[in-house]
Length: 391
Image 1: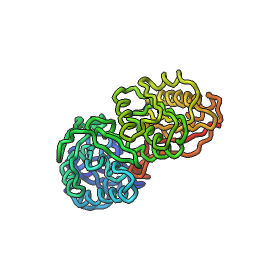
Image 2: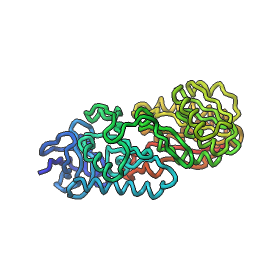
Image 3: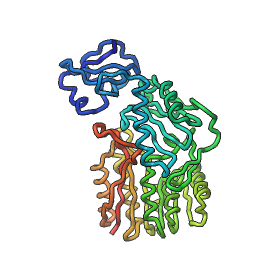
Image 4: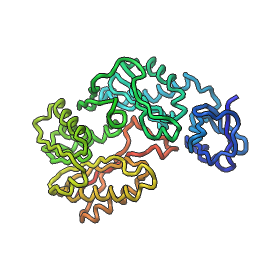
């Protein structure tokens, strides 16, 4: 008999609306062994069956939903979910990119599981006790379905501590990965360090936004802030930008960016690689840019960080507006989970007012197709971007 939780009366509404998380404060009582990662059932206070998922009594999120049906959650169940996710990516990205997210956690109805593909190598993240418990099953499924050269685990994220798990990384299948993996993205080449690179090696979630920059880069002078390994700049170079300045606080990142210019045969484009704090560097630049890209790291990892994060975003965008020529474009992004669209737009508006600039919002940018968001789980949406035109 499966363990189960019974919710307090009235607390079933989020579950009925499709939200995949059940918080411990909503639980009236538990029956059976709710050991971390155990599969069980959830019922309303009136005794109605609501669904099945994975428990973790040590987390504020006591249950992560997997299905609203009574069904056997075995290898076939998880295989179907993974293949459904993979089919979406292959249909849209085949021939365009050989690096993308195969499984996006809650967005693909597999909470806590991330699988990224870099050519013939898969990178696995198990972020919850439930997915950690099934890790062996997922490795077998990935091997049998995708036949990768290697699978490397990058469960080295701090959020695992909230699940009572330690950070883990290392090879779990296949050949040793000695060198960076060379991937292709819309005709651009990048070398990815899956062992130690940011996230699982590369910012796959910005792929379409990088491509959109390429389309407007011809003949433009571009400033790429927080450039990391130069993803935006390489697309701008392929788009025949006139000149590109890259800023990052990491010398290692700038070395990678320089290498990416070389392997894409873009040595003829004047580039300036600047190591330093983007806030300080931007203040000392003269206003002479056609396009500015702002893609900073998350400023608000917790809700309490929002006031400071808001000041940081405003300062950055204020400097960007100051540096842009008339008719210039600003590509500005936030990857802070707690920064919603309304607040982000208000911050950008305030920055434009303080800069004394009249600005048009041309388009909003967000997640690519391989990072889908469950509509019932707005917390899964974290990437927000805007393309703005200075008049």
